[in-house]
Image (cartoon, rainbow, N blue to C red; front, side):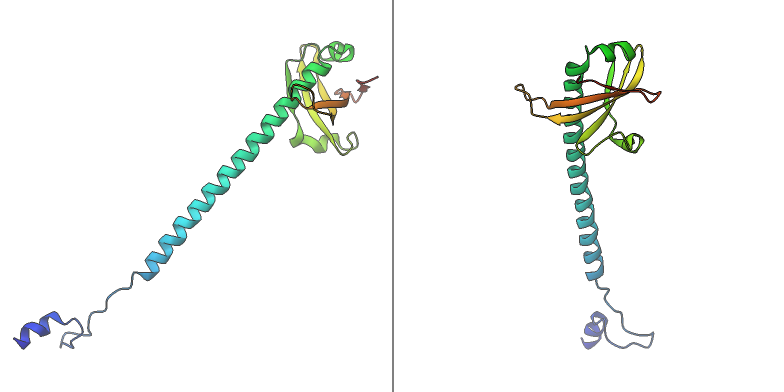
Amino acid sequence: MSQGLADQNPYEHTAGGSPKKKKSNALKIVLIIVGVGGVLCLLCCGVFAWFGYSAMNMGMEMFADSIRQEYGEHPAVQEHIGELESVESDLVNGAAYEGQMTPGELPFKVRGPNGEGAIIVRQGTPQADGRPGVAGGRLLLPDGEVIELDE
């Protein structure tokens, strides 16, 4: 009977070597918790970044619509650009307009059948239909000519 108990005791010294040690799962559990927490943090940050980008993009599209309505029929725009086929925010290339912009102005790249350029606008009072208001603008042509659009 004592022999049967000895076979069940993992810590009993045997002639074959040291007693068997149980491995601890604590490190694995901690690593799993940290890993899952890290993945959740990345997902959360990704969702907030996507939401922020989408909100900014929607706002810039609303501004582009305001520019189309405000300056689409302007004689200078019609002469140099033509009908506005494309109006896109150009915040990424803001350094290209260094010295031509003041704080509070936004650059928009414009394209049409007669050419392309940029319209620099100042944000004004929101319009009655909720679109952003445009308080003033300038057309910048590729040759460096600047045309005031609010004269």
